[in-house]
Image 1: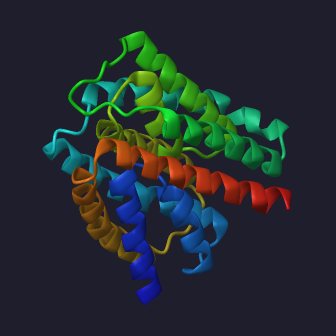
Image 2: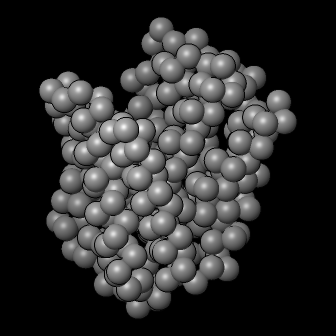
Image 3: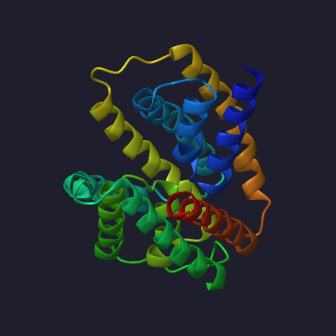
Length: 245
């Protein structure tokens, strides 16, 4: 139980700090630590990540690091195209999909490492069609690869939409809530959930999310962007090793 509490806190901390990484951390924790089935873990993860992201979004809103206009345009477009692209993944093996995702993360991480971050007050937000096209692109990749979340959303908001890293993190959390709700409705039928474990993860995760949002506030945009880049490059290298070695 202490390990579950610690993992719940870390998951919330990562979500609040980086605006992503929740599902990638939550599903393995539920399977290998809490003893959940993979199907149950995926569904429970949507509840846990959705709840933590909702709190994180509210906290970022209070700090002025959330763009509702971009969140709704980007998220709405992404949800529609994720649904359309979801059936395409059956044409590739799970290993091939994960390798493709890892290679994409290496490219995105490298771009974030070399790209200068806006200072949070002097950024150029793109037009509505550009925002929706960026959301559609991320939605296609998310639906096709079956993964994504903040690891695709935050870089797209920074590189394609023009938000600062702080606003991208806060805005990403709203989009994750939208995606989590959509995914939850699609997974509820026929899956039994351990609400005791879910509640434990949610409550400890909310504490971590609060700490992550507060911590992000005190980190310079360029440093936060570099931390995010290192995080997703590390994830990409792990996925490549796990699937190719």
